[in-house]
Image 1 (tube, rainbow, N blue to C red):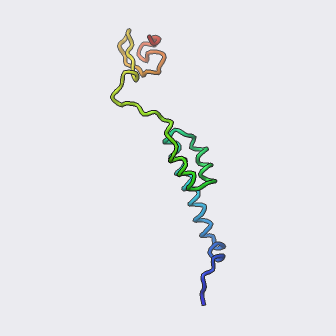
Image 2 (image 1 turned 120 degrees about the vertical axis):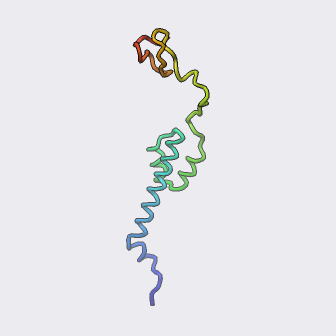
Image 3 (image 1 turned 90 degrees about the vertical axis):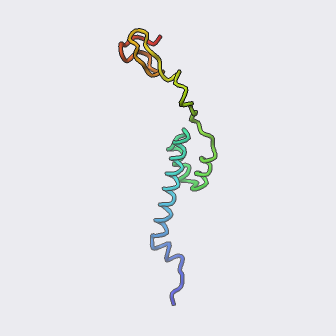
Length: 103
């Protein structure tokens, strides 16, 4: 008579493999969500590795650190050089066309 032996399933290695894959996928999901929200993916990978699905639920509930910008407002994104009329990114200190300092 074949009976269900829980210890035989655990010792066969399939159960341990399933648990390891589940934990790594859960930790990876937590790291991905953390990265999208502006948090450290390495820290959250480790936290989700230890806590499992509870860590993923925790990072899903925290607010995002990334500020959303209005895509129609381009006034602060670019500046125009007064000497050569080249458009430059807003955070560059000098013109990429002529090299003059931002005015």
